[in-house]
Length: 177
Image 1 (cartoon, one colour):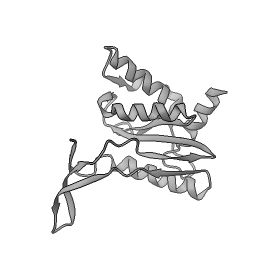
Image 2 (cartoon, helix red, strand yellow):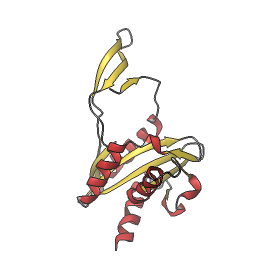
Image 3 (cartoon, rainbow, N blue to C red):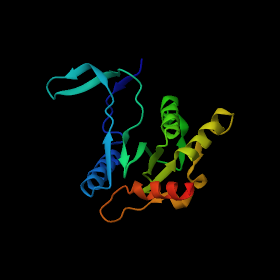
């Protein structure tokens, strides 16, 4: 059974940026995206500070976010990386399966990556993520390098949108046509 032991706010920077972007998209009527809570059962609680210090995951989580963009179902996960090499072990098999099933239902699944050392956001399509995943499963690299990514999918904040993932979704839609 998986456990969680608090080591600070890992991933909270990207999550906060995505949450703010989701609020702005909702306010503008462009998208309705919600954070998917990860169900945990607390084991140890610091009563003085009222913090959970040890817990276990009740079930495998799917993705971080799910919702709709102009009637189009979308789901995505947000990951941070502090180097130019992203280890595929940071993506779990049940997440890949969920995203695969989501796309079979005509939704759009993707990852948002923050290369923190570059201060760069990247929109990784499910298709490209799956290509890296399958390469690893077939004996290839267990990671992918920044240089393997298509620079057209770099997300540049604009108009108050801190993580403008609708730009990436539009590129996916354009490539389908």
